[in-house]
Image 1 (spheres, rainbow, N blue to C red):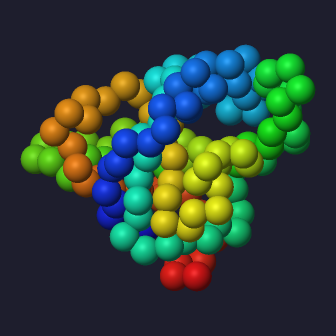
Image 2: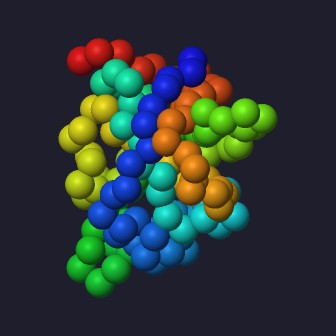
Image 3: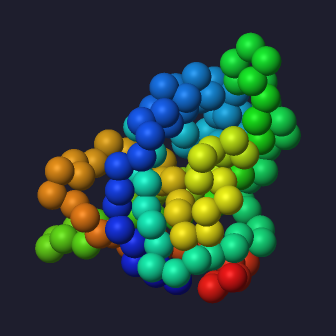
Length: 135
């Protein structure tokens, strides 16, 4: 399934947070260690409700007195640009993210990508997962 979305600037909190979370998350999501410490915020063209995830962590204390659970879907990210190729990514659902209850927004963790000319992208779901569209 390929879902179109628009990239937007977020609150700039994910980069420092993911860097602090990585030592705790890598036991559940080993590939996070090779990805850029930050997220690409994507507003999807329609709302989704995720029913199953590839990874669901227990509550993790990633900072003193800061406990949080994380849910991950392994997918691919592709810019809407000529010659753009899909790259592996994680759809990162942090329990205390300001976007947690926004069904049209996903946070994408992937390798470092030049987004200076990017406005739109695709999220490509590569594994079976149950997503309820349009709720």
